[in-house]
Length: 166
Image (cartoon, rainbow, N blue to C red; front, side):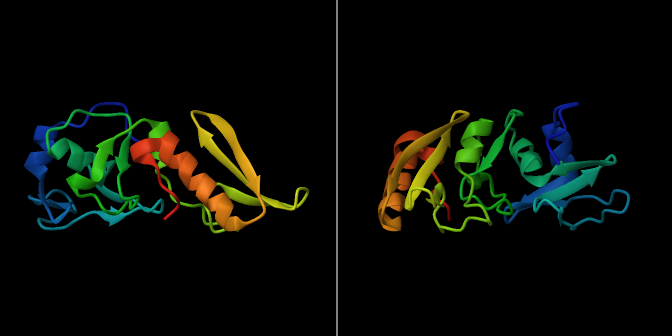
């Protein structure tokens, strides 16, 4: 579920419908099936969602608006936890920056983000994306060397969005 780009979120409407506390939004009024005090549900994609006027909204986008911030194309969860919607954990980002801050994939076999085993070379290869381009960082005999190279590349190139795969 992506952002609803049909119309921007009205921060005054969000503040009239919800209370912000403990890093989440809770209904301030009874509206339809929603009862005062109820919070968000978790979608199948793993994000907190609130629905009103028959439209599902990602809670972190509503929190961003609730705090009076301008609508942005992409919001990043600084700590990588998409259920942690505290305003302090949200920042505007480009899609590229958001992807740089992603976690290690679940199907990663090396245990290190951006590192995979090359059977043909019999070495660990480090390949990391930057601005729509796959960057070959190097190949290494030892996994620890590959991890250091990957971490260094991300620190230098991804800057504050660097995420070494927590």
